[in-house]
Amino acid sequence: MAILSTPLAALVAQRHGIVTHDDLTCDSYTRESLRYQLDNGVLVGVHRGVYRVATSPDTFESRCAAACLADPLAIVTGVAAARLWEFRHVFRTDTPHMLVGHDRTPITRGVVLRRSNVIDGTDAVRREDGIVVASPPRAWFDCARDLDDARFERLTEWVLDNHTTLTTLWRTTRRLRAKGRPGLARVNRVMSRRADWQKPAGSGLELRVLQALERRDIELVRQYALTLPGGQVIHPDGADPSIKWALEVDHSSWHAGRHEAQADKVRDRGLRRIGWQVDRVTDYELDDDFKATIDELVDIHRHRRISAAGAA
Image (cartoon, rainbow, N blue to C red; front, side, top):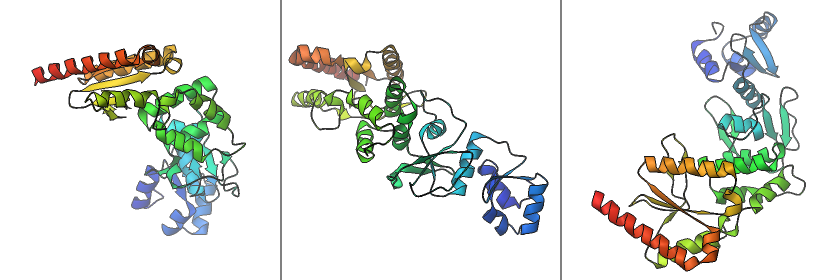
């Protein structure tokens, strides 16, 4: 780092050891001095006009930063973005997967190019280290081409729990629903397994439950954000923050697996640790006797309100 001025050295350290030709030119480097540093191994060429300081390790993050600096319009996406966002249920890649337009070939080595004619401002998040990463919804969609259905279904649940809403995932799917797009069939299969009430259509079972409770003077906040002790943010189907009570409506086919059941138990314990009570009903219960199930929820809510008032 002694070859760089103090301001540029700080910037390069932030970028995981990556520096550009323009950076060095602004730092008073001449063509001869740059060639000398390259010939003597002080700088290592990564892409055209992009270098890594040899004393900095060649890491996944440095490769992503180098690719983004080589082309400011490129975006780290798919399983590579999943690694940067620390998504679960995605295999760990060491190669940046870069989203670029169909008419562009900005980077020719060390990356996997993913092309799309649908890229807008909502798809990119610019980090302080120079990496431009796909937003969680776009990264989620682009992961579909590289995962099997079971893993992508688990990823979908995890992304919903930690990063975004179901409405946003459906909106992303509609926006990227181009014929022949890799992964689209898998996205459609996984998303279609969700019951109608899980889709943002303004109707269906979840909405019926919330409206039935409203008619009984219980107004719950939909998708209320709650932060669990480990930092995970969840969004119960309905919540009454005034008494710390949450309601989840579970669809049997979606939540029947061992992984999903275990995840639900972990979330419920986390809610209890922050003083919340969570109650769950299933589509089977509601189909069997909708009114009796609503009566039961009203009774549970009443007891919770009495208990909360007594503790105040």
